[in-house]
Length: 423
Image 1 (cartoon, rainbow, N blue to C red):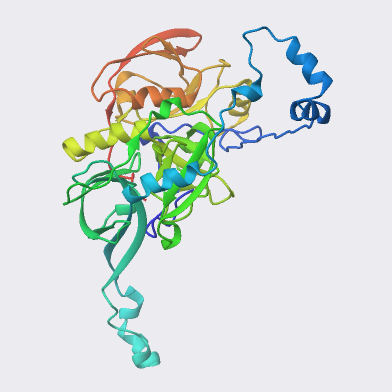
Image 2: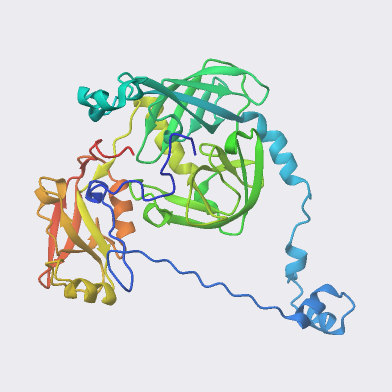
């Protein structure tokens, strides 16, 4: 994260979430709050460990004798890995990872109360009548080179509002950067420097990654250049609301590779040194948990930024919540909800933004979405993903339950309004 991003990892935007089809979070105590619990368990089988370790164990020999001829024991399936494979990854990829120094000028005003001449009768020159009107904020982030002619991927919040962007290569060269485009909704940005024959990274397919695989992060945390951390993929498909950045539209990769301020925009790599994600967020209330944007999402957004300089995001204009029997009971017993829910499954529309695409199509608060374009919808995140993958102005066939009846509606997603997305 850059020093510009004071609220990263916090619920930074508390604006009306319906602008981004934001799901309303839930818990057993209140359907408006969110709670995640993880149960961890471990057991040790000492006898089994001895059998696996001791090749001369009679029990192991007996177990192997009972295997079919074509079977291979799990231990034989595990490849012998170079113990220094992370070193090899860093040597190959490190030259393509850059530091991004961004700065912006902030204008400050003298508080109006200080302008009252009566105060000078009591405090004299101790009250500044003229304060510095401008100051420069500086931030440090990371990025990685994707083309030999100088295209660089980073986070949008690293370069947001910047007047100047300097790119520092590992070999010490400092190049002037130009922001090609930045998308605050997905936190992806593209920076261009004028150079040739630059080292580049290789990209992987982030749809194929699985929890438990290696994860290697390279970046410039806290201004400490070329820092390497390693861990595993802890989880995939973490929603933006679960991560604590509800104004974003990303299903994050979760990793326990250490990520700190300044890592933002740097690559998350697999064991082959291929980029699987862009490090972007940490949770302020947790330790050992970091999040990255999947590289497939980054590629899709960066291609649009390079082509047009901006990205259009589809939206409906609703607030919604995943229905469960407990959520239904909480909503029906909440005097402020003004809803009477009879369905137990689906996605409940809690509120519809006036004059939004959803409102124009006839969606109402209390409707329960059951399917979109023939695909069943059971979770609020599924509906948000369906909208995010649609095109602005296209037709979406939405089936809802209303008053015990199925109602079919055609909704044309609109372009997500730009206001309220930054912050």
